[in-house]
Amino acid sequence: MESRKYIKLINFLLEELAIPATVISLALRHVEQTPSLLPMVLWQYGLVTLSQLNQIFDWLEVAS
Image (cartoon, rainbow, N blue to C red; front, top):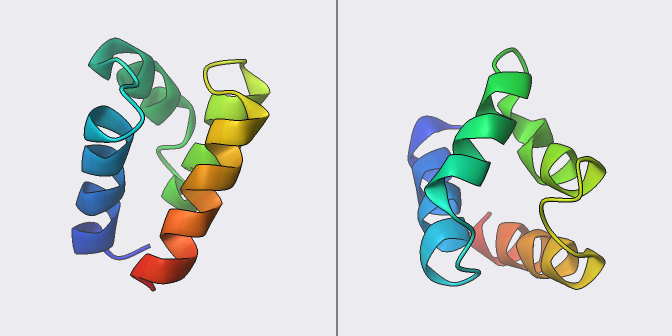
C-alpha cells in the first residue's frame, strides 16, 4: 500500500471510525512487514467490529 493511501487510511480509522490511536499503534506493530493487512489485524484482535471492517474495506475500495 502506498504511503499516502496508508496515511489516509490511518486518518479514516482515527476520525471516521473513532478508533483510538493506541489501538492503531498496537495493530501497526503486528503489520510492519505487510501494512496492507492492517484492517484484518484490527479485526483479528477484536479491535474493530465486523461492521467497521466492512466500512474499512468500502473506504479502501473507493480510495483506490
